[in-house]
Image 1 (spheres, rainbow, N blue to C red):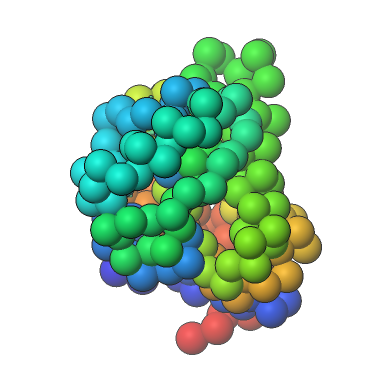
Image 2 (image 1 turned 60 degrees about the vertical axis):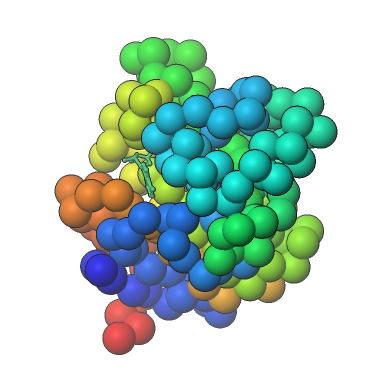
Amino acid sequence: MTVLTRRIGGAELEVIVADITTLGVDAIVNAANTSLLGGGGVDGAIHRAAGPELVAECRMLHGCKTGDAKITRGYRLKAAHVIHTVGPVWNGGTLGEDDLLASCYRRSMELCGKHKLTSVAFPAISTGIYRFPADRAADIAVRTTIEGLALAPTVARVVFCCFSEPSARLHAETLARQGGPCAD
Ligand code: AR6
């Protein structure tokens, strides 16, 4: 279900409610942990849908630091690639959580630029098991991704793939504030 679409520069940004594992984009972003070897939430769903080849490639990456991102192939997913990023665990906001979350979106966009990807879908990183407040995270996600378009000139489509309508509403509110005229 598409909640909002906005054109910003050469890119279309969409807020949708969907299961990210079903999307046919160049890359879906995974909210992983530092091991990159799978887990619960969206990470578990992506590994289940991609098949065991994904964890085999992840094993060769030797983990990922919080705030950083690494790219693999998508295997049995419709998406050609998976960008694995590690969001911060929310600890009250005094341990640099905002900057680390922004870094996840920035590094993911950098990888899109480096690999000349044209479309990317993000889940609401850190807002599940890692307990980052959903409204604060949505604001960082949308603002940092818009800034990150400059790092990824090939990207023509960005999807904020929310798993619930309340989450989509938060992303849509921020995007509506930041975005230009409606693309529909
Ligand atoms: N499609 C889209 N979004 C989803 C899906 C899905 N299939 N499944 C869940 N979400 P979480 P985190 C949403 O917990 O907070 C894992 O164990 C979910 O509703 O997946 O970054 C990792 O290995 C929420 O809005 O990730 C780490 O250990 C958002 O995705 C840890 O969880 C993120 O929730 C990472 O925790």
